[in-house]
Structure formats: C-alpha cells, structure tokens
Length: 413
Image (cartoon, rainbow, N blue to C red; front, top):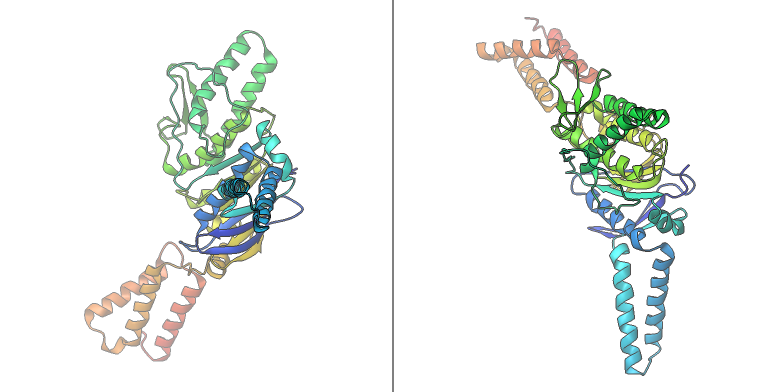
C-alpha cells in the first residue's frame, strides 16, 4: 500500500496558468491523467512536476521549509532598517541564495505529498523511485558483445536512462541461471527461470500474442522474439510503438532490480508524457492498466489525448487543463461519450459526413440531376448502405430519413 503519494498539485506559474490547485486525493494514492487541447500546457505542467520532484534527490521537505523561513526572516530583518552595511549585504545575499534554491524547485509547481518528509531518505536507500518519460521516448538497447556483469545502482535520478542496459542484464541473468543449474543450485536456477517466464508472459501481453517466445541466442549474446508466421527479431528492431512501451517497462524494471523483490512493488512517482504515443488503439486500451498492475505501488502522473486511456483504469483523477476541471473515474463511460461529451470531438469520419451531405444535396435536387450526377447519387447510395465498416446509428438514421423524404415526394428510382 502506498504511504507516499501526491495529494495535490499547486500551479504557481506554468505558461499562462497561475495559482491553480489540482486536487487528487488526501487519503489514498490515485493516479492523475492530464488532458486538454494542444497548446494547453500539459507537457510544461509535467516538466514542472518533475522539477519539484528533483528536490528529493538532494534535499528534504523540511530543508525546503527552512529555506523559506530563513528567506522570510532575513527579509523581515532588512525591513527593520538594519544599519550595519555588512549585515545588510549578508542578509541580501542570503535572501538571494535561499530564493534561488526555492525557485529551482518551486517556481512553477509545488506538490503536497503524503509523508513527504520521509521521501528523501527512502530515495537515498533505493526504496522510492522517481522517473520521467518524455513524449519522444524510445528504447535503444545495447547489444552485448559477450557476458558482462551488470551492477545496478541502488538509486537513480529522475532524468537517468538505464533501459539501454536491459539486453546486457538479460544475458547476465541467463548466464547466471545456466551456471546455477550446472552447479546444482536448484533454488537460484529456478528463481531466475521463473523470472524469465514472468518477463515472457508480460511480453506476450505487450505484443498481443500468446504464442510469443523469448529465446536466448547464445551464439550472439542476444535475445530474439519468436512469433509464429514471422521471422525472428530482437529487441533492437522494434516499431516505435513497442519501443515506446519497452522504454518505460524496462527502465522501471532495472531501477527496481537493484532492490530485488518477488514483484516490482517499490514505491515511486512516475511521469509519462503522451502515454499513448505511437500505440495502436488496441494497446492504448491496455497500456495504462498494464503499467499500474505491473508496478502496483507507483503513482503515475500521465498526459493523454486518447479516450481509450481515459477510461482504462478506475483509480485515477482526470484533469482537463484547458477547462481547469477535475473528474473522477471514467472507467464506466463509453468511448463515444468520452470523445464527444468530454473531449468535444465528433467521433465520425469527416469523409463519411461529407458523403452523406453530398447524398442529401443530390437527393434534394433529384429532378434536375444530369446523368453524371445520377450515377454519383447511386454510387453514394451503395457506399452508405454497404460500406463494410458500419457507420453510426445516427448517420444510418439520417440517411434513412433522407430516403424516406425522397419516397414521400415520389422519387423512387
């Protein structure tokens, strides 16, 4: 159970946004989904949250509060007309130094975090992780040239990138499993093989193929993905969508491996910009729930435009940065209602609507149509009736109404 999580985000100044509070939950950890029109400042908001979280890499919340108190104290002392020049100069320098420190972390954003005074210590011990993934992320794994011992650090900064070590780490662990089996260390061997089975099962989910296999290519110190009907391929030749997902999953796995547990249950706060980037719709529906299940004690702060992400988990607050409105739990809403009512976008293809509009215009002028226009009307009628991908009921009803009007007016050709 999460004991440390963001309860509220206070925006001091992020682009055109000033003095705004985004409440999440005071009592239990909830994820936050930031949405809003292009240009509303989603990425800038996430970067501001990242800047504040950097505080915990070197300092604690009590130290931040102390800076604020000292800046205020020196400011008050100066206002009392201290006459000594050297004292005045020292106070001004202290105010400037403390203000600079505060602004480094709090100029844009301040976070109200449950038990925040403990996070710096937990971070130093490797028991709390912080990570940020930008929208252009990709997984660029290094192919091992041999077996290399990978010694993971206890902690990593919010900007660190270690996902490129994942293949080397896999080869290292596979080699350990082989030696453990040769040395009759059954317990260690089984533990490592179970770990590989777990990774393979999750790759099956990501690649949406229950028949996928993760095979060790011992001749080339690499791993291959085997899918029936496809040529084998490795983790360095993935599409942008799969690369985007694996850049997140492998990064978080490696950060938690330094504190190996049976499951990846270390606490943390992870920021992901445009979580749906490059993903097919089927994966947009699954990716957020997959991450929250795989890393159960991580609080995710994400941005998205996708209705398939917005209703994929129930334990989340959705905040529209453009409208400045917070919503609770879209998991029971249909994609249609999210697209049209929340995102304010017509879900239907502009091409289909244009064809229907043209069909209506030709029908209204049926008596004056030339042969070419008659042929066009027939083509549109066939398209709207027989298109393999069914149109909405609303559009079907609209066409039926047009046809009915035409029949009532006596044009039944």
